[in-house]
Length: 284
Length: 305
Image (cartoon, rainbow over all chains, first blue to last red; front, side, top):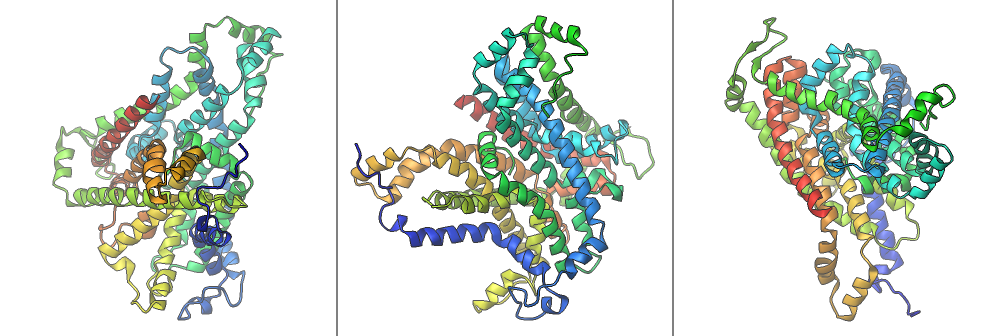
């Protein structure tokens, strides 16, 4: 009964040294690219073109960050990305909460078919819809507005959010809801007063995934906004490349500025993100 | 987010929801999702197929005229269409298994009993959260022929640096390596979640039977991981067919159009050339490619439910 539950890897595999080495490999694999551009962003012009190249900056400088904000309206890009991602998140959560509740709780004859349809329809490659979406947005007079991005981004995150929320809603005892309805709550009242608050972790997880999806999107942001004032960060960052020159330290500084917000989000909510990704797993 | 319905103001109309049948309530709750999917996907797909049968170029100033299969005929004779399709399929065939193998390796490493889980978890999450376009830019700098870190490492080992972006083969290699790196961490997260559901007792029993570590991997771990691997593979395949961000930010499809993908060619014809008819025909081809993958996916979902 109380036999020692030694890991199958007893012996050399569970050794502390090996764990440290493997952990080191994982961390280098995951963090090195971000660290490398951090180093680059701190290097001054003379050091950058020295050969052989240096790994760590000899003399850290903030000039590249100042130039990143001066050469392009980086703050505006950040603001646009933030607003588009925030609006997409709120809209996606609203739509997918309602849909997920119907799928999780109501007796639907075609439940599986509807769920499959939501997944299938939403995994359509967005790039193939470039032409018709362009026409739809033009017809609705939404070109060069945030809505031109927010509407497709809802569809982008709808499947993963719906799957995450369905699995959370299914975990909430029906009795709680029934009790609320006996107390005079309507069905929708019970959804918003009982089910959603109890599913707060799931709603939150879905929200982070929707936010990251919208924050990362490049193709539609590149294609639907010809107005420079509406550019999002991924599009804006490509503008630092001149016709012939690639100011790599400045680009690196801008990239670091772009990475930090989402990195902070990920560091704080890492466990939720992992659980959300693995329960609804969509997005490569 | 958890906006409370305004119950005071519209009590009477609101309580009417009580009388709704389940079906009506379901229809009401699913309506926003349905309207969006129709507006953003279903109608555009129909419109796309329709437009692909027309000559419609916004730069020509001519009104749209019916062209039958003319766009598709042009496409079959267009060397750039074949080149970009070949590149897209090559990227898919190389990076999907590549990311899977790296993902399995990362997941097995991350599954060791670490005292602190968060550094390992973060090292898988950060690449996932990094925008593809950022990854493309970062790795373009990595592979820079003079000041890039990749060539620096090669030189330290006494090898010659490679001029990565001047030849089709090396540029494609750099792109594929970047995509494999970027996408493997998501694979690893999915596979890691699968690994953690395998009961330890299975390995203990295998130990008793004297099965070695390698045999345990192939006879216990891999078969039990199959469902998570298949899900990860299908999503990865669908996104690989749409590859755009990384080649666009790394090479802009160059040299020439030797590293351009089908998605980039669609974007170019649509946004740069405003040739909506031809762009639509190209998009229909890609649509069919990913439909095939989605079909396989749905069949798999249905068989496991």
